[in-house]
Image (cartoon, rainbow, N blue to C red):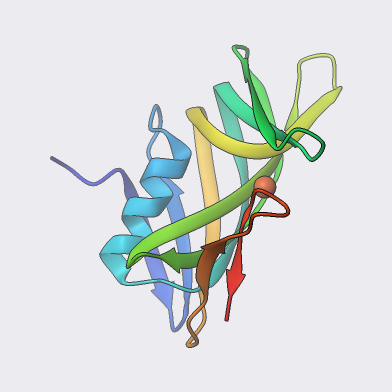
Length: 143
Ligand code: FE
């Protein structure tokens, strides 16, 4: 199977273009796995035609997922890269601009590119794990 992305590298920084019609989170995880990036940060922009966002209700600790099937600009994507059980663990949030210029946003579960997705990934030389936290229901950083 061909790569889901192309990139150029400048030291610990990577300029990354994920291919059109790919799913962003899985392609980014594959890139980090391929490059051995287990701690870092990511930011970028692009356009998608479907995205599933997740909201954690702190009262119930239940996840509420919602899918938006429409063309949207990634007006902002920001995330961090860490490690859980030896695998890449991504935590990514997005703001998505709709055709009426309103914005939806939140925790990004998955989104399919329709246009482009241009990211910058920075690798850090420390390690950052994750552990499940009972109080919040989150996988918190574990240093
Ligand atoms: Fe989140």
